[in-house]
Image 1 (cartoon, rainbow, N blue to C red):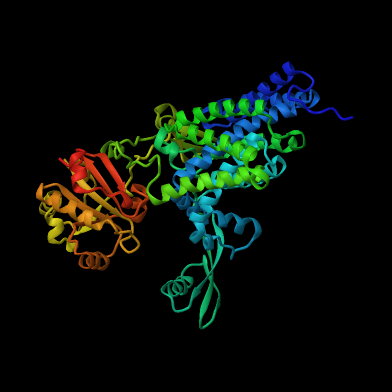
Image 2: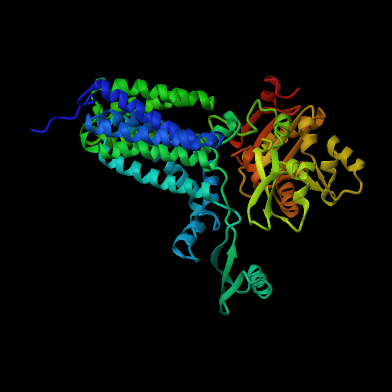
Length: 585
């Protein structure tokens, strides 16, 4: 009779040591591949792979697969729950990231390149980005909980493996993307459209554009384009950027997925010996999971994931034990998680993210974030070739221009064949970039805008300007109330009367009140007329407005550059409430 697999295997002591060494070896490989440790790349990788191989062999010999699989379940499950929750906290933001990948020059270009499918496109998925965003969030949470409690482990292990293979492919694409590369793209346009006419004209002058076919109704164009490289995979939404100041780099995201794929591998090959947890095992897994989740919560500065993970796991176990004939199983647990996640996602979609990780969150200093960028340090290298020997050698600018190397200037003997720029310290862009830069064309100024002191003053002091920018002025105002409207047409204006009342109060107290939107002048005039709301309006890029708030519209109160309050359109307060709570003084 085959012996039942146990956690300790043939030796608890040896298997614990093998698991620890295996994780240490994995850590060495990851650390050695990071740019910060490039000088130790060979050493760390050599040691890491040796330790990985020897410890993995020991795990198999001493039958410790169940032990390392359990460790992997706790790590993978915790990360999936937190990752799913962070995305679920801002499904609209995650949808924006998916839309970036669905653009024709992003992920689709890799498929075109690999399979020669120049007409392949993922743009048809753009309209479904939010639905896919919600689906991925819920699936991550379900898989995270089920792998922890040992539910449907065979199916879960397959789904985990498929997800991690896809995510690893995605981050590998992101990490290896080079915007200087070219790919062949094929598009179809309506013959009478303006873009088709432009392509027809350009094809006569540009060899990179070719008209494949042309009919009375449509033309087919092949064009060599450059990829649109996505700089941030969106793995944890804006949580890392909003908490530690930056997201994972493409390379770091790739290694994160490689590590998870490795851990999922142990779960996958151990699926036959993993069974649903006993009560005692559930207690242990819950404690370990909460420790992992707590560590991630500290990183994100958000402790709700601890509560959510606890409710998710205990609730799933309770439904499985008390769900009766139909729900007393892991299907019932999954249904519970779908309902729980849907309630949470429904709330944030109706109102706002439970935790706002954006640069415009309450308490954020906008002025400071506009100036927190750092200049990088670069070094110019001259690659000099000895014309006689053909040997090439690199010199820094200081070395090349020094008197001791004057012989290198002899063009008969030496030639500079290349100049390279080596990044010593990478530059850091400010948290709030030029994407948020409210402006107005001088010809569009109306009495409403000129009633704002900062607009009137800048207009008088810059009579020759055709466009006026007010980013600095807005964050230096003593008080400014902003209505952020991404789209005037699709915005929810059910609380516009409250906005009007706030505007009237602000006018009486000489407090600046302005709407910032991305609309044409005709749309703005129509909005004012239809709603009888002659509000001052400034323009801004649509992407910048999305970063300010997910709600369309929303209300922000800013005092000397600090966001005092931020309200989604369903929670616009009354004037009295704002006064009583010290928001308008």
